[in-house]
Amino acid sequence: MKWLFLPAKPDFVPDKITLLPDNIANQIAAGEVIQRPASAVKELLENAVDAGATEIRLIISDAGKALVQVIDNGSGMSETDARMCFERHATSKIRQIEDLFHIRTMGFRGEALASIAAVAQVELKTKRAEDSTGTFIEVDNSMVRRQEPVAIPDGTSIAMKNLFFNVPARRNFLKSNAAEMRHILDEFTRVAMSFPEIHFSLTANNQQLFHLEAGSLKQRIVQLLGSNYNAKLVTVKEETDYLNIYGFVGKPDTAKKTRGDQYFFVNNRFIRSAYLNHAVMNAYQQMIPAESYPMYVLFIDLDPAVVDVNVHPTKQEIKFEDEKIIYAFVQAAVKHALAQFSVTPTLDFNLDASIQHLPSIQQPFTDEKKTAVAAGSIFRGFTQKNQAHLIEPGEGSREFGDGSLVTGVGRREFNAPIASQPSSPGTASSPFSAETEISQLLNTYICLPWQNGFLLLHQQSAHERVLYEQMQAASKERPVATQRSMFPSTMELTPADAAIMEEIMEDLKYLGYIIEPFGQHTYVIQGTPADVEAGNDKHIIDILLEQYKHFSPEVKFSRREKLIRSLARQQSIKAGTRLTEREMRQLVQDLFACAAPNITPDGNPTFLEFKKEQLERMFGR
Ligand code: ADP
Ligand code: MG
Image 1 (cartoon, rainbow, N blue to C red):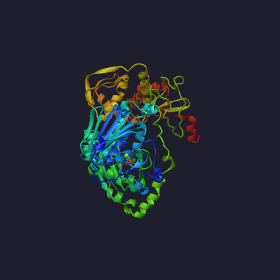
Image 2: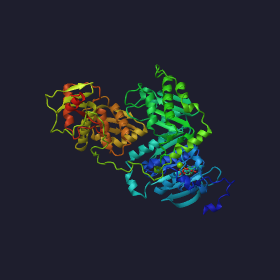
Image 3: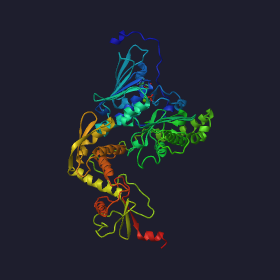
Image 4: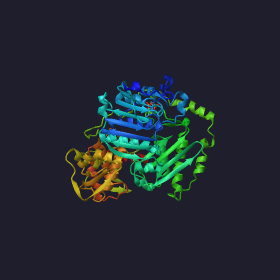
């Protein structure tokens, strides 16, 4: 009963948290907030940021399945607030509808802690600077189990233990530790990137993965994404009355083969936007090869009244009042940056002209305008769909754990005016004999007669299908033959890539790659498939990791499936490669020996069929 002897409370400081009235609560984009350990990581880190912390520690064990803990030195909570914070719609961040248009905090819905407390065991310790003692509260299944005073430093520690302990079905949907860890690293990276002035650390299973001292954005980027970006960042910085943009883009030679290091933050919130991504890609036009992806970390700051962050449960998608301006602005700012650093000396372009002439930028942002905005798109954003407790599609679907593929998954309809896909010319009806004429066009297509017309194969797509089926067979039957390297090379990976490596190492072995751990985040490539050219094994693994990431959002694929797809894509003969007649014949033969010769693993056609009568018709015959 030690709390009977506590010193009297010093000067009264009011509690902060209130329950949102129903009319506001009902307008908030509700959703399943906690889907996996990484969702809790995001919410808890954001709460610590909102609490004004200057130092935030994240502690993980068992990929967050056993523990996600965030310790901060922020404002802390009063005893009453410490109990209140677990109520649904309990928040200190908004009070009235108008507040929704001035949101500067990461959170505002008052849902995260309630959601966490519903699906895990939670221990909260918190203390305000103005209080002499802190509060300890234990909650699980949404019930307070214990509460007592505790002596702790100012700030808050929230530990979420045994996620989904009371919802075994959801616990079973969690992925491998490596996969869940990767999600955690993604969330950690996004928050840490957005607040370089805050000291962050991440410890997983007692191993410190990150220790990020407060510093500049550039330092933070290099710490998080790797020092190879060090001399490769170009500053972006433009300011107008309507919005500011700042950050860095990678010099064109840092562009990667798959989408990777690309970050947009709007008012410090990480967002996904295919539209704005397109704006950046546009700025790089003709500076980077097709199908490569430049690095960027861009912050867009603008009046919260012209963005709606309330359209998506995890707030990763937002709506701009006027997307077109933002697009033009992003594109212009990136072009300008690239030009200024004489990355593209010939670029004939003037930022001020193209930006300052945009109508919305010329018009001052008046109060009338603000009111109009509030009455417009943002209110319209509160649609019915956002009210339901929705689980994002795909999240609940199961992986095919055995590596099997449901044929046709992801198959895309395509529109070819005169061409059509032959049903499925299997081996039996193979169009092919040693005498058939065969020719290559544009170093990309293979043309051969077929029935009453001809087929046009895409060599890269066709080869991708062939390799894909060969590797699938190999991974099911017996491992691919490996050649041991005489001089094994070592690779040092970023923590995020190392997490992927841990995930795929076993499966890689089946496909002929022997990779062994060699100290923290370092791996030795001991062997590669016998038919892979010696010497560039490191490069191959690099690309593999890149491509593997590219597939990661696609939950429907098993690990092995993703790996095989990446390898097939990587090792396929590229468009633009000249082929000998023998190679062409081999490829055609291999293709029609496939189970599904007419599509790539992604569902694109591997060949098109042109019928003579269609051609005749087109010639008016
Ligand atoms: P929201 O962040 O949307 O307000 P949460 O459920 O995440 O909702 O948190 C509820 C409330 O609990 C917050 O509004 C804040 O007042 C308080 N809170 C949560 N985490 C912390 C923290 N680390 N430090 C101080 N207060 C916190
Ligand atoms: Mg929150």
